[in-house]
Image (cartoon, rainbow, N blue to C red; front, side):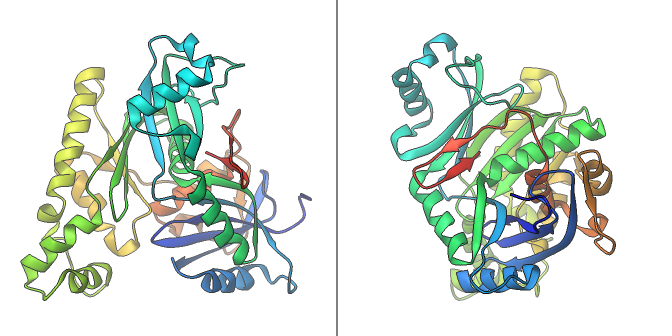
Length: 351
């Protein structure tokens, strides 16, 4: 792709679409405009793309996009005999037995857990590995959603891993030494990660998502049904901060279990927490979790971090005004060495 052609970086989650129009899909690049819309239909995404790109009818917008398939996974694993992993059958059985994931149905990548670099039979496997991916069918559905909106994705990345890589890059660039708790809360469940610099030390799912909070909201406020509770929860008309400890009780228990185990095992103390994806009106969750856990909230300094990777904002684009949810999108723009690539039947998907 010619560097002069305008392009898009997109993060598409179940809550929102974050978009940035850029001068190129690879650094050095200039961020020319940013925009956010709620998650919605193909037509709504197409309208946003049309507004940002001003393309002739029938022309596709070139992009790099990250998506969050419902059944995505990022798991840490210890392989006592890493040499055996060169046998595809052994690797597939290890993933199935350890994580209940069938490799035949999933696009997946194997990474060196300490460096984040791609591990292959040719390169060899290390003892500590990270396995990440999602069902092939879910990747295909998201690719069709993009193309239906007039978007041509040069790369389709796993949003969870793009965020992990972005957080790791930021921590390393800023010289933040204490481990960071990264929490991804979706409607059905959550994912908890602990990073030390750009190294992923812990990755595990927890069963609580936002949906388990709606019966509590209904009961606490005397609402007629869970649907009413859900609508109120996502609106900007009610302050849930006071109810927060009750709503997050189960999530907090899981986090305290994960962080407590990690701190005992490593002797390292968690320094800060970062919540990805959540809508702005739910940002109170990050503050409440930080206060309860006795740690800080990670506050990304976008301009200096991105500048170190050859990424600059155009005049009038105020990166410093953007909140922490944009860290995953900007993580897509960073050029990493030996980035893992997952091949699917539909497209080249980078995890």
